[in-house]
Structures are given as structure tokens and as C-alpha cells.
Amino acid sequence: MSERSDVGMFLSSHEVELETVAARYFDARRDRRLWSCEPDACLDVELWDALSANGFTAVGIDEHLGGSGGTAADAAILLSLSGRTAAAIPLMEHMWLAGWLLTQAGIPLAKGPSTACAGDLTFERTSRGLQVSGVLERVPWARSCREIVVLCPDGTVAMVPASVCSIVHGANPIGEPRDRVEVGRVLLDADGIGRTTLGQDELLARGALGRLIQIEGAARAALERSVRYVGQREQFGRPLARFQAVQQRLAVVARECALLHVGVRLCIPGPGGSDRRLDIAAAKHNASLSVPTIVSNVHQVHGAMGITSEYGLGELTLRMSAWVAEFGSDAYWSAILADACGQDDIWDIVTGAVR
Image (cartoon, rainbow, N blue to C red; front, side):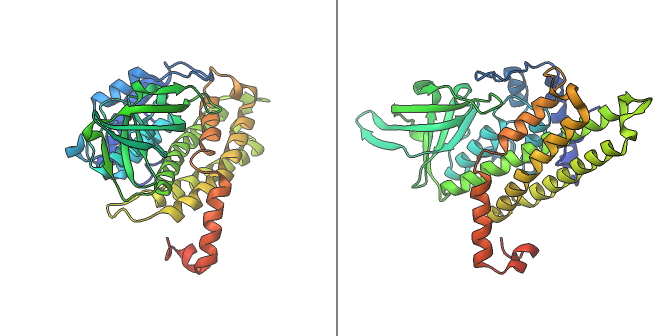
């Protein structure tokens, strides 16, 4: 039976059904995929194809643009599942970022895996059409994607085919692709370019929220794995769960997971799409404090077992540690909070009157 995801504390019947069905695909692959900490970590093609065939890679994207429909909360359920199972797929990049940018620009969703980033491209009108050039740094999963959706400083959104770019492999600490993409006079399709009023800071905030949702899923999975472990493992003739020191560590992890959950739920945009940048800044700062605490405590209760690749706890904790540093550092988001506190009444910020 599938575990409940961490986003699902207050789910509607529709959201429960979505989570239950989608979890079957994530859980089926969780125990069979390759463990890799190498810089050339592989895309889980089987999982991606299964999710794509059933419309789970396009949730939250308008149907008239090639998506599956649904809300941001629906998409968050799938992102949480990807974090909970440490899925090696660019779901956040394709669905949460690229799909969102394309929707805002009125461009149909890319057919295959896609990724998104902010960049400053040069456009040139030629007799053959519109050509684009530039260099994009640390693009998530670029080598595994068919399209790279780029948001430029002036609001131009360009869908660049990855196959005609030069891609230099890079990686984050867990080995997930973070590649350098060199775009050299690439000819764009007429329907692959559009404009939006979104700024690059809004893309950064959206990416930070996507990572927070995945971190929350991974944290909850690490807690659940730890609770099972201490209930089954015995020492000095009784389960580890009976020891007060172990109970205290798990209580601390549960507290931090609850903080992550509340922060994420406040940030997920509703139908009105109101600005949640300040909420995201607060949640991101809290995550920077929570993740080291969660990681150290779940590994403490596991002992040596927790660091073995075959056990799988490290898949979760290493990803949490890598993800929390992406889409803006703690210093960046803390500065946003500090600026807001200097401009607005602290009480209004704490009570939610200012966002």
C-alpha cells in the first residue's frame, strides 16, 4: 500500500485520487532504478514514459496548450511524490517551470522532457528566420531534454531545441545534471517564441517553491523510513523506538517536517495567482535551517545502516541537501525578508497582511 505524501495533509477527494493513482507509478520504479552519485546520472526513461503516457507530466498546464489541466495544488502533489521517491526525472523543470512559462507566453507545451532557465540570449533576424545565440549556465537536466525554455530579461520566452546546442555536462552534489548550454545561432520555429510580463526573479521564486515541495516530500519519506526502522530494530533486548534519546530525535524531525509542510502550503498559488514571493522567502529560509537538522537526526537514528547506498536513506538526504541550495541561497532569500521587514510593519508581515 502506497504511503501518503507530505503535501496531502488536507486533500480533497479529487486530490486523494490523483495522489493514489500517480503514486503507483512512482512507487513501482522506486526500488528498481539505478543508484548513482556519478556526474552522468541517468534519466529514468521508464518512469518518465509511464507518467507522460498518463498525462502526469502536464498537470497544471492548460489543456488548449497541450497540458492535462488541473491546479497548482494538483501539480504540487506530483512534485511531492517525485521528492518522496527520489525520482530521477525533470518533472519540476518540465511541468512546474517550463510548462508554466510556456503557458504564460501562449506557447504550446513541448512534447518531450523540457527544462527551463533564465538567460540573456541574442536574437537576430535573418533571411532564414529568427536565430538565437547565447550561453546558459547550470541548466537542470539539459542533456536529457528535447527543449530548453529560456526567459530573457525583457520578457521574451524562447523554446530552444536542445539537440542543436552544445551541452557541457555538469552536476550538483548528488549527480543530477546541471549543464552548460552553448546556443550558437540556432534557428527558432515561429511558434517557439513568445512574450510574458514575468520577470526572471519570478522564475527564480517559482523554482525555489518547486524545490521546496520536493524537499518536503523527501523529508517526510526520511521520517517515515526512520520510524519504521526504529520500530523494527532492537538493541539491548528492546526496540530502538523505546529509547528516549531516539524518540527525541524523531520528535525533532517531525517538528521540522511540519514546519516545511506549513511553509509549502502557504506558498502554493491559488486560482487568483497572487504574489507569494515573501512567503517563499520565509519558507526557503526555514528550509535552510530545517534540512541540516532533519538529515543529521535521521542518520543518527539509523547509524551505519543509513549511509549504505542499498538502503536508500541517502538518496533522500543527499537530494534534500543539494536541492536546498538551488534557486537562490539562504543569504539571498534572507535579504528579501530583511528588506520587507525594513519597509513594512513587522506585525502585518507576521499576520499575513503583507505578502
